Amino acid sequence: MKASHALPKARLPLWATLAAMVALSGCITLLALWCQPNALRTVVDIFRAQPLLIVLNALPIGLLVVTFTCLFRNVFFGAALVNFGVCVLSIANRIKLEVRDEPVFPRDFALLKEVGSAMESYDIQYPMSTIAVVLLATLALVVLGLFIGCRPFPLAPLRGWLGRLLGAAGSMGILVALLLTVYASNDLYNSFRVSNAYYIPSVFNELGFPYCFCHQFTTYPIDRPAGFDKATAASWETGDQPGQGEDVHLIMVMNEAFSDLTDDPAFTYTEENDPLPNLHALQSDPHAVSGHVVVPGFAGGTANTEFDVLTGMQTNALSASTTSSFRVVNRDLDSVLRVFASDGYHTSFFHPGDDWFYNRENVYDWLGAEETVFVDEMENLTYKGRWVTDDYMAGFIEEKFEEAVAQGELLCNYTTTIQNHMSYTADKYGEGYVYPPVETDAQLTDDVRTMLEVYIEGARDADAMLGRLVDYFSQTDEPVVLAFWGDHLPYLGDNQLAYTQLGSEVGLPEEERVNTLCSYETPYVIWANDAAAEVLDWGSAVESLDLPETNRLSASFLGAALLELTGRGEESPWFAFLNQLRRELPVVQKKTYMTMDGTLTPLITSDQLSMIDQWRQWSYYKLRYKEVE
Image: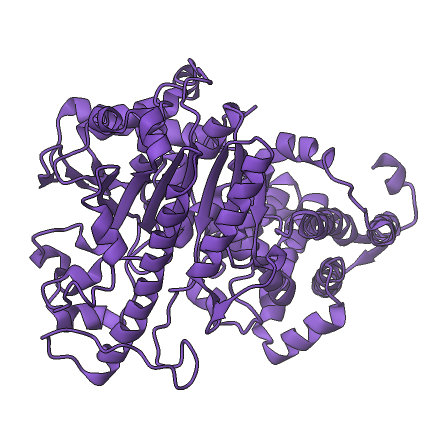
């Protein structure tokens, strides 16, 4: 800086400094947007139609320019630092989008070590011309700062470091306040028109990286549990003992919106027209165990159920505010898939949807799936309406199972279906599709009757998928355990309209329900073919699970129970702990607990409360700190 004082300098008056701040902030914003993979012209067209986006993208950059201008007392030095920092982030966002199809989030700053390791794993094509432009622009601003300064602030008491610090703190304070209010607003964020609101990379490209990055500061939070101690949590991560389990294939199928809604007394189905004959047959099969799994959400949140089952953590416990579990995953995690992989299994995930939805492409890599197959890699697809059929997915599982057997591999697979996804409108399966009538003595409006007809048609197909898989695996000599359950109850109209007309408890306010879990219960069945039943000594294996009288389980305990059922209950200290907790409280749903005799209560013992606290702290440690080898 001493050398710069020796150079002849022009001094900008206050008004010119302010004008330069505005102009430079706009230029930095444009340059940051230009660094993105989509064409700047496309972004400008979107901003022209939604001009508020111009302000939302430029404002945080402008406030940063003010901050560093105050500190350096030079608008060009301040702009140079902001330009370099913002554009480096923007280029990093571009690279991450191209490599992982995922934007840069603020939480990535906590993963710099992992980022360094990941960079060695990818063939990254750096945008050298873009990097050169950013460096040249930064250098040009530095040079301008050497020759053009700012006049002293008009108020003499604010010309020293006090004034610099007050100015910087004031602008940063405004920025933080905006991040916690305006930029945190989901209503504002969701009000902008985008081509695909569920595809986060596209949203970042269309709404602008600076705005979206700022919005993400307050989304998908993970609350630090009270009293958390990293060293204590790390001490629980000892005692892995792979290789204890029995050699049986595990096929897990989570079926979209699968429920036993038609078992409600309002329906009058008979054995002849039962929509769920296969589920009901398995409920009395000596090689099957069935009950209800308590999932994290109602009428949505498919990925949250996947997260709960596979990791043993609970979406609802991650934060006091609503969050999306797959959006908080950004590192390798322990999972059911990893336990089977440690025993030499081929682990896989199949889903007839897009790989970017819920960021599944990346998350299942972090969960340890060796193979992931999404709709774009599936051949000869069969659709019913707009969704790939459950019957196709049954065939796909069979095909992949045969591949694994032919290669001498044991298979651990998780499949999430999609056919019975909402909306349940008359045209879901095409114009003119004839649905079997709903068998009920409830008084239904026409729109509710239509919703139920469409939904139950999908439930029939889901049950047929279950039956097909059971028939298929019954005919193989390979030992196979099949687990089949629903991800959540179906959405059947605003304010639980169809449930209300059916007289279901789901349609009542929660405080009026006898079963406070009714909105979150979906059926599950775990079945073993003859070969697996023999290998596992099925009767003894099921009995040793110590399931509660009602056979109800939180989704977070289902994966742990499957590990124990196949002889892997003690391979992982984490899942061993979950099975211990399951024997105390088979269901934990926010502040509602179910004891082994089926009693629902908000009150638990101090020892049980201590186990819950350990569960939360251990989960936080895994999400934030644990290095998975």
